[in-house]
Length: 332
Ligand SMILES: [Mn+2]
Image: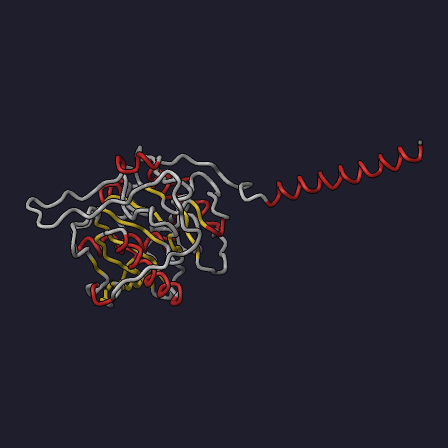
């Protein structure tokens, strides 16, 4: 009896240990472990927050249909199979629906260097995506010359200003070249608050790593972008400029909007992850000091030559950058 009891106890202990190991493993690898839960606009409220283009006075065509949001959306878990006809796209990557009046008009701004494969994959995908949503759009790729470290924020400021010189655009989408939207419910349009569109990315197991993340894909109205003085120009190298942008929005009394996680899904084209630059992280504590003088209103000091070239599927803006006088003293 005693022997039996000990054997039984040993077995229970083994079971218990196995169970505890199981719990720990589940805890460590659970997809939600690093998730920051976030507020988002309820599907039934999205139309109330979207900012549409007012239709022209005498309309000859019907307005394009809006996306219908179903309660249980069957979101794509991977990339969509979409098509477009190159012959229907105007030189420089412009398009508008032929048979209806678009309710959204955007410019897509994409900072770029050395990612040829990503660029062609992105461009081929996004035309079909935007056309399925009946968006009137133009695509601007802003390429930085090789000599200085990559400056994502500065390239956005350059692309924004250049696009506005070509045409009147109410809504801008600032887009990384390696992110592909997975759901057609993720409408490429602006909301009454600056909008973070890429809150569920596959490389983060479709979770938001931290609540103030404002990188990847962001949509802003012209007025919102002007109000925050655009992106900062001083961030060379990887990281920081997106957190700076978030603080700019908050400093001006706005907040950010997001859509539900199942709508905001993105697939990131594979690349080696870079690590953030120490100077970039340090600058973040001074954003409110320099926000009004570092941004849209002084980016030109960083530019020597800017030119554009119209390709069939996009406009390429090439920017030759320089460090402005006094740049070394910025952080002293
Ligand atoms: Mn990336």
